[in-house]
Length: 161
Image (cartoon, rainbow, N blue to C red; front, top):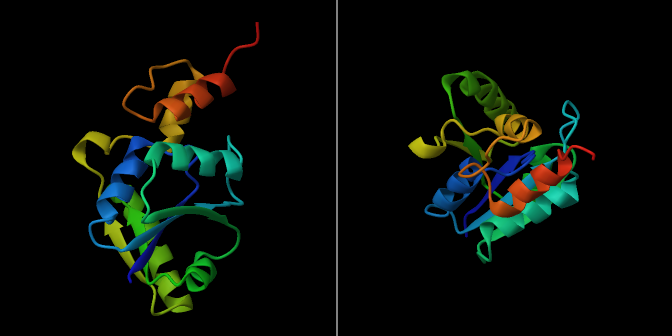
């Protein structure tokens, strides 16, 4: 059974993330969507909120599990029995960082492979940071995130009366 991990901060999950998750099921038996704690980022939503949004956005797919983790991704992968990491590349600018991370992960756990996926054309421009910016200024979130995530963003950025 081939288990893969798609890790990220998912703050919040977007239709771009959902696209990669669903397409990755074409070549893995089990996918763990892993909500990471990134010490360099101050998240808008808690780990529990982000986990709930992912579950709500993906529905009930038995081959997908959603978990959160702290620490090194390779340690989490080892514990989960994963042999593959899924990483998304939206633009060439993503490649240098992702390549460096893949090499470090290979150094730390040589049997863990990294697969880079590009988003579908209709989701290439979507990033969680842009979605947060659109929401902060009351922009239209249709086509960017699920309705549950859109509602949570609108509530988070609601102007006090």
